[in-house]
Image 1 (tube, rainbow, N blue to C red):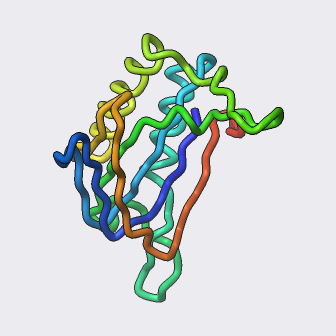
Image 2 (cartoon, rainbow, N blue to C red):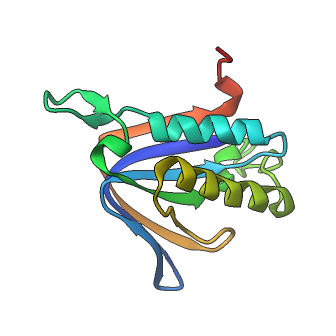
Length: 152
């Protein structure tokens, strides 16, 4: 799994002109799922997202996590995070999981994040043509990949 985590002061997703998810302070998370991903990857990534300390404390240092600022999450599925661009100018998405594998993991990620945060997770619509708007605060953008996790 790959996630692009953006600290935002606001973010929203629209599908066919209707808002499907909207947050104020928190994280916009773009989530890419590949065929090799497991529940273990999902749990590791969900814990990383909710524990990431990138919000400013009273001294302006990035020491606070999402819960410390009462932040929310807008989770957007994004298979293009697994684009392969080594050959030619048209990206290949062969590593991205097909919907039959990706949808259950995406839905499980929503539930896991809701359990970890104790809040409803705002979302887009899987596979839809989404219009995502955000105000990146900082800007702070973190890229996480479960293939890079350390097991200790």
